[in-house]
Length: 180
Image (spheres, rainbow, N blue to C red):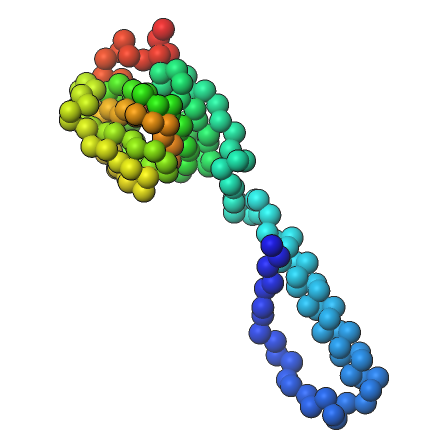
């Protein structure tokens, strides 16, 4: 889809009857060229990344394994470097019947459920009876250092955002897949 940028002009209206035929033809060609160039400029500006402005669709995400989570989870970084003290946005995709043991983060984490149901709870160990189901559109905000856990019963995709560096510290060190 092409987009057209409409800008106000300082050109005053002229009664066409007052212009000779040749001048009307020149004006028509000029207006046509201006309109065409605006359409071309708008199309060129409608790119995936322009001066830091990023636009993506889900199919363009690059999903990778997540070594800091149990096997099966996939990660797609949308914005930022997770190991730097800068804003980040990432998505996590969990398969059905997935469990994230109790853990915490050194920074505030904002989690928005995009699809599926993400069951989350607060505590030092995963306890399904102490969790709350968050369907698509649900959001959780975890203060830094808060122990929490999660699980799924269906494939679920969440989007996390915050200010890095992002990390994960498991309450029980034996739950950390990086140590296996």
